Length: 71
Image (cartoon, rainbow, N blue to C red; front, top):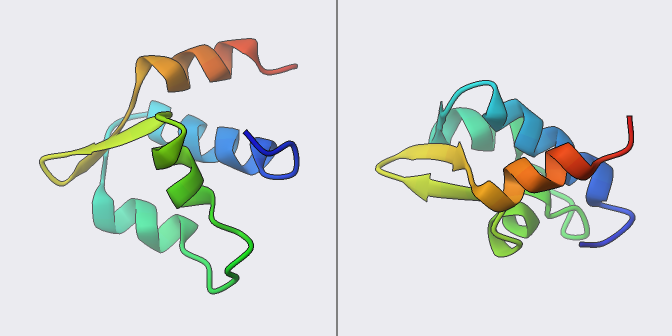
C-alpha cells in the first residue's frame, strides 16, 4: 500500500466498516478526477473492500488494516 495513499485508503475502509454501503454512495463520497488519487481503486486492488451484489463491504484484510493502523 502506498504510504502516501495509506491514510486515505484506511479512511475509506473505516467509512465502509460502519456498515456495508451501496456502490453509488461509496463512489459519490470517494470519486476523484485526479488520476493520481485512486483511493477507491487502490482499496479494491489491495483487497481491503469488495463489491458484492451492489454493496461495498470491508474484507478481513480491511479489518486487519484498520486494526493495525496507528492511533
